Picture 1 (tube, one colour):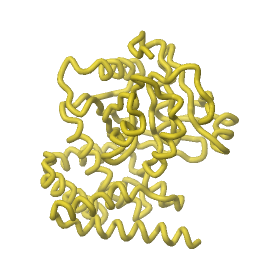
Picture 2 (tube, rainbow, N blue to C red):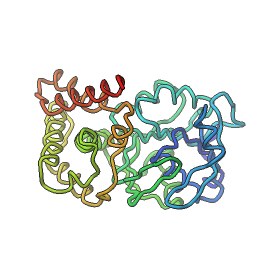
Picture 3 (cartoon, one colour):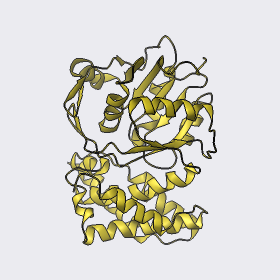
Amino acid sequence: MSLWHDWRMTRISIIGLGAMGATWASKLAGVPGVEIVIIADGPRADRLAAEGVTVNGAHFDFPVVRPGEVPTAPADLLIVAVKHTGLDLALTQARHHVGDGTIVLSLLNGITSEDEIAAAYPTCHPLASITVGIDAVRVGQDVTYKSFGRLEFGEKVNTEPYSPQVRWLASLLEQAGIEYVIPPDMTRQLWWKFLINTGVNQVTAVLEAPYAVVQTPGPAREMMAATQQEVIAVAKAKGIGLTQADFEAWLGVLNGLAPGQYTSMAQDTLAHRPTEVDIFAGAMVRMGAESGVPVPVNTDLLRLLKAKETVWALA
């Protein structure tokens, strides 16, 4: 497949039409010439095909393709927007949409999904990325957000004039009106987002509370900060240059989020769904042991969230 054609003839496949995936689909749908399909199966596919999805009051009926269906051509861009707990299945279900040179953009949390995608699709071109400042929430088929935030993306190391894949995606994002940044060191940025999520996602998940609980001084904000200081310490031991300035930068982002909105992980605990604790506190406990860095707050969060999941399983 020759990927480098006019961006106005672009095939985009999206797997995972939750709050994040639906918000991105709604933005990209406004680009002339872009064709979007949603990969889904079972009752979820039936609901999407019958009801579509609504984002900030605008209704969208995206074509739904089931995993067994083979598209006429691979996607130019595959967006993976599932939870990490569903990544293995998603990569199996999306395999017909990936060809030589297909760009794959992971909107997942954590610091490992790009490597997992590269292992599953050896001929694709995964780009490292993080989303910053999005506060989308999904209830049924309705998605709302106040802040779309921005995408930070690129190769692991980026120097101008950047790779053809990075330039191509940047052009598409500009047409969609999506703010983006191409950092020189994406590994460091992945760790910055890991710092964010390990603190705010887990603390709000345990408390089943919105952003407001950590936007003002108090015990919840203190626990979030303590969790994130452990990430900085582990990162330092691993040679990743996170500093206190990165924590302060996060507080600037946090202040701009809608106080009444919930992190994706808090939405999971409210709905009694399995959480992503293994890629946050679980990863921190493992890396802390490897690095000789104590991580007591993450250890407690791992126990608390695993205990919640055990209680739900007994219900």
